[in-house]
Length: 626
Image 1 (cartoon, rainbow, N blue to C red):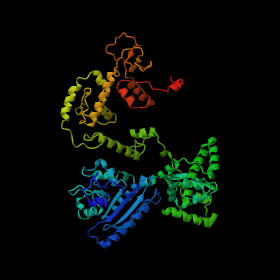
Image 2: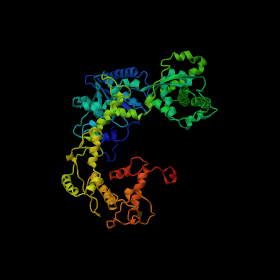
Image 3: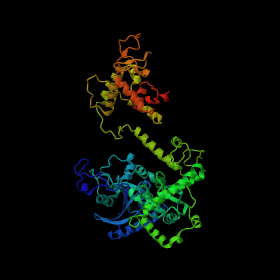
Image 4: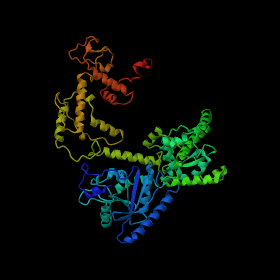
């Protein structure tokens, strides 16, 4: 978002003193939205009433769609603002760790614009125009992060872009609104950009309910009442537990402290979470507080030698302990909190203290609650790599589905869409001949490339057959990778032959591009290996050689080829061989450091025809070695 300072001085560019175009204007994990009524036929006096009508309609829509939804931190909200001569509705939502909240806000606003033809909406977060980030793959070339501020608007459910007006600079908010009022016909609407920017909205409104998770937990009856009366309070309580510190834990860890929710009169109820909140609680390791320790120990003992039901009860008790601990920390500062839901918890607790046990729900009351016994599957928490492979291959787990099923041949429709999007973008990048190693388009080309290519082809014709076998062909490797992933291989005519080894003592030409420099370094490395006989792929069988100036240590057979050209074939294997000890030692230690996994040393040696045995242990573990 452009700052006022930058708007006053549009000539500032990245790197110039005073440029603030990339500074974060919003808190992290926060989305900001602005709603404008722009209609030449609407009198300025009527704008305020129109904005109030939009605000009420927006809140009604939010209530209808998010009635049972649990916001991570802040809910959708709107207020009237007057700033820089503009009157508009403004709102900000802190979505914390739940990105779904951000996209739910975008969905609400897009749906709202379909009901008001003269409503213009702008959304942004700490990354700026995040809708353009989503559509980065299809953006026009004239639109860059330096000048995209205030150029993205939503109207009538569609995405519109404010084009450049002769000069490349960021737009201030008043300037952008002026363009929307005076020249709306100049705005750009691209279906490709819109489809990419709104891609995540395709799963709404169904995603609102899909994002929720119900789980049975064991908590004190007093807390069960609060969770039933204020179900959305689970969000701040989970955050209090997840972000706990030593100060907030102090009342819990003290054996003399009076607890708001002591672990007595426990009941098992179904609680509604979001998947993010449930995962935050489930993933935390938490030592039971003193008040819960005996209960947890008894449940663990029963679960060790007990049935699956006993293990299930232990999991419910452990989750209930975490939720109760979160509410315990939350209750200590509920009355002074800025969060409306947390303040409501303080009011409910005060009422419970006045009414006493008479207000507590009975077991019959609890069983009559909605979704009292609901417990959703938790398998979404687990990563099953076999299922993931099936998803990549387009096959569903279990029985095959009918052809009429949209997700036929795939385990999950959302996963199918996401994976296809990733693959399509990767394929587009590989097939983009103008894309560089960093993904950027290369607008300038070296005019001498063609001449260099011709010289390189003539130089490489003189290489020996053995050099071709052990040399790394970057183009061939890229072609192989394309074929493995099902993409068209690179045409042979696009191969670029790189320059051969420069003579010793000659400096590397720094004017070559990065690929040529890398190839020259590899050529130097290859030349050194050949000089020491490491690339002799057909060595004559000999006895293990010794290294000059070192103890007689047996090296792998492939690395002990003689390099003395004047050596006799009948010469004894005990004769000293002049091998670069440090080079061989470093290669072997690098290979050993891979611990049997893929790595640079193993890959280089493999391309040279070496297959070293896996190192099963150190010298101290000789008894474990094969």
